[in-house]
Length: 539
Ligand SMILES: *[C@@H]1O[C@H](CO)[C@@H](O)[C@H](O)[C@H]1NC(C)=O
Ligand SMILES: *[C@@H]1O[C@H](CO)[C@@H](O)[C@H](O)[C@H]1NC(C)=O
Ligand SMILES: *[C@@H]1O[C@H](CO)[C@@H](O)[C@H](O)[C@H]1NC(C)=O
Image 1 (cartoon, protein in one colour):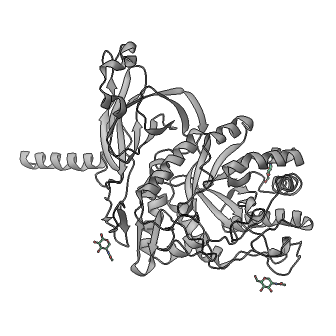
Image 2 (tube, rainbow, N blue to C red):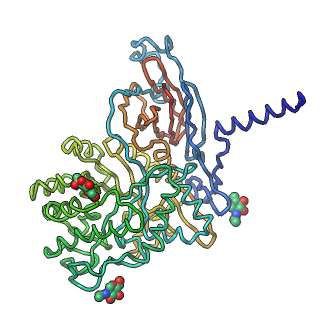
Image 3 (spheres, rainbow, N blue to C red):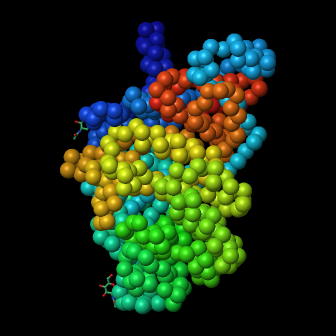
């Protein structure tokens, strides 16, 4: 080689190597202005293009920040070095002497100390639901667009989901109400149990693609909305109804049969919930597939039927999660179950909780955790736009919805939730299909005829957690040392890095100082209305 070509070679390899190191190979968001005042952008994906994000492992003594904002940033990366703060802001007295600070500093400079010795719950992961609606929409896309979709959610350069929830039979997000073994009636032996076309052609293929693409084991949680109507007191798919006593064991077997059928299709069920939203069959505000449980009856069924059926089966390690309803119902259900039969609580491994009662502060979850310390808390369903007063079911490009997801996920994680599963992975532009017309929003909307899907701000809100808080991460205590505050939650990852998710809901900038130990700190500036994930290698 001549000197000149050596020089060129060196430059080229350096550029290639640093673009590898610094993730310049990420594909940016193909932003679309949705044309409505007050909305943020959506990112458009098709057969040949989709935005990606890789996680850059920070080198010792450095950190990497990922930013999304109302103004349009999506996982924008920046880098920094941990500062030694010897002598800098050292004297403790100065921290408490606010007289030296201007009013603006008081409100716009937040500071925290990570107490990495105070450790809380271990994280299982994050994910979304493979409903009929989600998988039918996904199947409308061409093969290569389907792959980009799955990669966006599960891939190494996507947001690396590792949890999935799947309905056992139909839910409202189906094109029609159905169950397994609908005929013959009163068939206690479940002699005609078989999965549906939706399982074989939509849900299972989607789950399998996700499993192939995922960077960790995908743990699947399954829930029944309604059993065959012949098991129910009103013999209808919805309305006020409980399980007929003579079918208590049959309904337990119905769950075991589902685990067996999915096992044949090579999808392991990690957890079962004890029925989706059991209050809906007691107080029928909603008009879709349901089964009501009074708390005491649920205790009797779990203690005598579901618990023994699962534990005596070949699938004895399947977790059983009770309640699967709003946070304000947990106490009522667990109390009633324990009164009816204390064994029922021995059979359950945890509590599944939904999003729609979050007007009650999340502290209620910490109380539950204190009283039932050996049970995990798993968030199993969330979506925006489901309430009668939500005038818009789909609110395309809404930053507020991403903000609410972020705030509630932070609150849940700070109150002992170990994992967070979103509702439909995707829906169509109207928030369907849904046979009961209960349309809602989703992080991804699919436009089948255009072979295109769009990622809403909610998708990035989910990713700020799911991608950077790997399974096995442990939450650590964060001590606030300033008047100013931004929502936040912090973890130690299995690799020993600190990951912190922060949310600035203000319309102005906020400076954040994070002390990672007595002598080290990191300073970042949060843009107005932004979400940041920071990964710090403090070793
Ligand atoms: C896919 O999106 C890219 C980027 O927006 C665009 O250049 C390309 O034309 C699109 N392809 C199709 C088939 O629409
Ligand atoms: C078994 O179920 C199918 C529908 O899944 C139904 O067509 C058939 O009649 C049922 N068999 C009996 C014996 O009821
Ligand atoms: C669970 O079942 C397996 C066989 O599938 C058995 O080896 C194991 O001992 C069982 N565990 C419990 C706790 O019963």
